[in-house]
Image 1 (cartoon, rainbow, N blue to C red):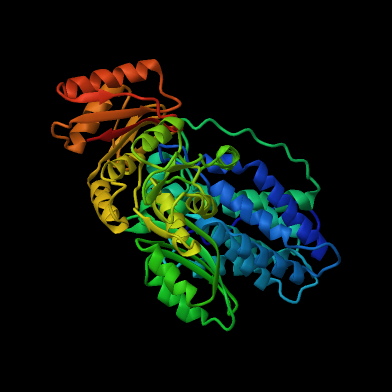
Image 2 (image 1 turned 90 degrees about the horizontal axis):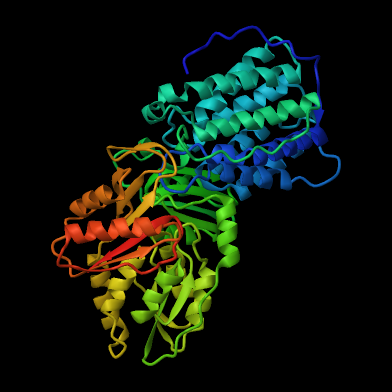
Length: 562
């Protein structure tokens, strides 16, 4: 944003003043309004597989903020501090952490105020703007930072002419909307997609909620979730490539540290040096950390020396497997750990799988226990610990079969009294390859060495349908097209499954494989299976091909190559 000249103040209403109770109610209404629109924000995403969580992260952060306010008479300053503390404790994801800092700055702007008018509000938005920019070590324009700046700049300009709360709010919304509309001009990837930033859209909704409360317009109609088709946007602050520069995506690592007399500045600098996109906030009793790193274990190891950890959350940024809240809830409700098979040997194997057919294949290859979960429905550390502790012997090999499950699997090692080894498999094909080298008569560490080598040599292929339009990896992908992935990287896309498969195999550099096993997902049709069968036969006429039911969601086929 470069505009510094603002239009005259809006003519909305006479001056209004909020006390602490009204300020809390205003943000509670804004939180409810945001929740009704969370799916609209979630839909602003261009990654072509089911995903989208900026709306969910911001909605949950808002809910945590207003949930921290008790009943009773409080000053505006007290409510501001409670909102900031609640938002910090409940912040989810990068967008949620930055939103929590907006709350923190807002609270700083109304210190010692029993009530607030439009001028107080403008000052609070100015502090919120400054705090948000300070929280991000590499601020990037075209994000929610740009939008909160647009809101604050316009509010401060208007407050020079009027103390009206509603007038300042109206003009803050106008400034935020103008800034939001400018985001495609500031980020080329948004311009190419023809969309605006998702986090910035969330800021506009929050401000609209505050204004509607001030005007007495508090009826909320829940908006239906939009179809994830052409025109969908993106959520920059959780995934945009420019945020990472030339670095690998790595793991999006979030956690809190609680301690006494924390050296905030030193901890912030030390942690920031361990990765990219660091957003580290807090004080001498608490830190909220968001960082993108290739070594989350190193980051967490350092953090444990500072104090007690809580709310640990690790996501693999390349996979983008954070999903809509409804999908997660359904997955959690249906998750179960299958009972162990009759066992013979000194070492058990616990493996993770998302579909009945995949689970069956892992069992057939020697897995003792299956934990249900995987992409978009990651099992918890507790789920994995129960499976390990329920194994029939004290030596256990754990196959997470998903990048987002590896950290939870590693945590099990320190939580159980059993000898547990984690082989960091990132897919079921890798898990199957590892099991192919498992020998129940071998010592534990000998098995681990052999299985790790087999897993690392395996290639994981997959086919899915794009849920939105996107330009990615040099490919122009349209909603509904078939996409081909190698180790979670999209390498081919098109309308015809057979042609996508041909390009997928070519990109994988497969040379006369002995066996190709394609596990059909829940959404795969008979026609899809037949098309894949013909494509495999054409590419590898001498190769044995199998097409069992996998039962996995989201992916038409998960393909194992031997």
